Every structure is written in structure tokens, then in C-alpha cells.
Image (cartoon, rainbow, N blue to C red; front, top):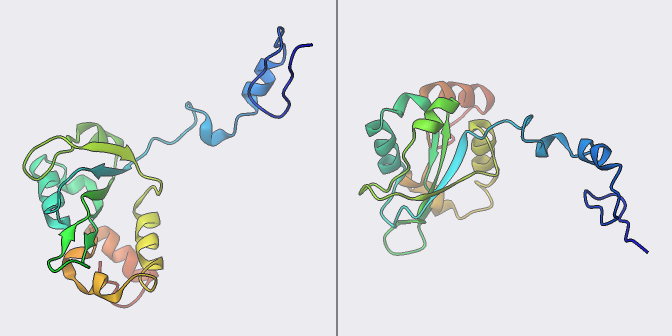
Length: 167
């Protein structure tokens, strides 16, 4: 007897007559034609000396400074000298900027990039703020470990979260 699976997108039977119906049941977030292209990315392999300032400087050098609104390169401050954890989160304001970006280390070597789980500056600033109390205070006391945000984002954050948030 042929094997039939229900509630999946797989059909091992010899006649898969209901494939169009099953394909139509794919959640919208998985449909390539309807998915929103990502604007937030994680660049990995930046090295232990990469800071928020260094990553932002590289973006500015590529002519993308005005098209980025969030940059975060977390530091490992548990060592004697705060060192980069080797990756950065970058959010672009438009898709053309994403296509123009040439992700490189501060020394110019290409790096691995993938779309971030959290998309947009709002989600990333929210994540940063949600974990302020969860993480060691010294991590955020160090000015180099704070994210860089554009002036427009600073205004929005100030309206939503009054007080010094360290961004």
C-alpha cells in the first residue's frame, strides 16, 4: 500500500493529486514571492578587534553611512581587555543599500553574512534593551559595547524610552 502523510507538504503516494492544495497551505512567511526581503544582517568573522565604530567606518567608506540605521558589535568584556566577539549586526534602511554592501573586515577581508533573526532597528534596539538587566552591568558600562544608531533612530528611541539608554 502506498504511504500517505497528512498535514505535511510531502506526499509519497503515486498520484499526488492534491499537491496544489498542499502548496497553497504553506504559511505566508515561507512563500518566497510574499516574503519581505531582509534588511538586517549578521556579519561573522570580523576578528577580535572589530568594534561598532570600526564596522560603521567600513560602511561609511563604502558610501553606505547614510543608509544604515543600526550597527552593533558586541564585546566580550570578561577578558582583561574588552575584545570583539567577532560579529556585528547591521540594519540597512533600504534594499538597494543591501545589494551595494560589500561585507569586509576592517582590514578588507570578505566575511560571512546571513540574514538576522530579528529584522529592523526596532526589533534589535528592543532586544538590546530587554537584556540590559539580564547581562552583566559591566558589559553595558563599556561605551564600546553599545550599539550605534542613526540620529533618526535616536529620536524615535528617545520618544519611546525616555532616559539614557546607552545607544
